[in-house]
Image 1: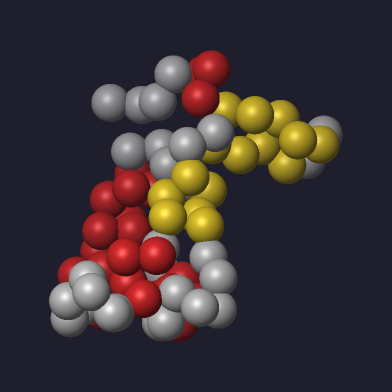
Image 2: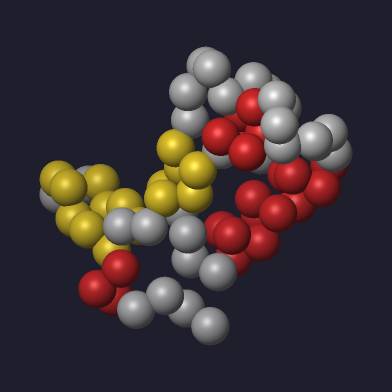
Length: 71
């Protein structure tokens, strides 16, 4: 099932993003348990297939940037 058109935002003529961000804070480790990197990247593809294309990353989110690189 595709996301509704209203869930997209045209920022510039060549940049269109999903209004719903996928946060990566859960992979920061502390308090969230062990992260299986293979399962995490697979979940990222599942989100992409569902139409979610905007990700929230920060260097304090542990391996979030590494997972995005694998993705």
